[in-house]
Image (cartoon, rainbow, N blue to C red; front, side, top):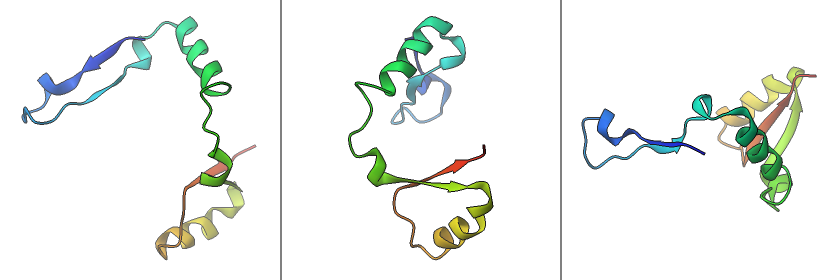
Length: 79
């Protein structure tokens, strides 16, 4: 998977932006990465760090965030 070092694009030499430029990555490796993220690389504690909420539950999720009571991540089910 191609990576790009963004450090030459920023002013500070103390900062490195390293990551995956998925737009430039061919589809086959992208699909393989997504497959692995859903199987052998999937975090074992994912269920404990994320909770699913329907789109209609966003007001409650925002209230939880605003109150500083959020733990982990919210996954919004838009289906």
